[in-house]
Image (cartoon, rainbow, N blue to C red; front, top):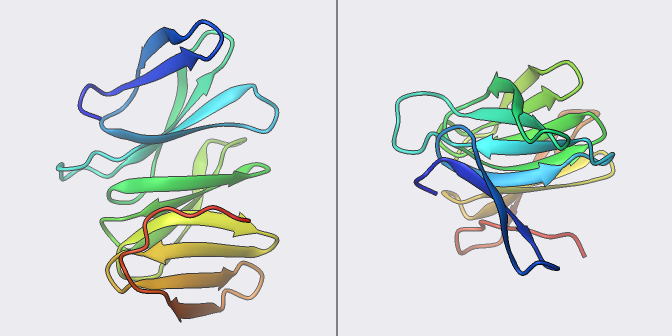
Length: 158
């Protein structure tokens, strides 16, 4: 963070392949399932501006689209064509359609959402402020808070 670049590295070459200029304060990057694109979460931390999600081509490593999301996005997970983004600064989740390059929904969950994972039709979001894991049923919209303590930040499914 700090120089607004995404660094591509090679395990085989044991080093940096290329630094790519992206938006302010990138916090995470993921490949799409087909490997055609890199999706970058750009947080704009410390700024009054909202964050964004950028979509880069893996063919030419250039930013093709930039989609505005909530305040200080810090994590994301991609499932098919939807990128779910945790907006730490305003207590929301953004749903971004990466095929149509637009935010299609934003829901308020409160607190400071951080780590996010998806399993089936459920999202799990760590709320760093309230020390809970929020389980969200994407079909019904129902939310359940699960106390876990200790500022949950990153998660992985096992």
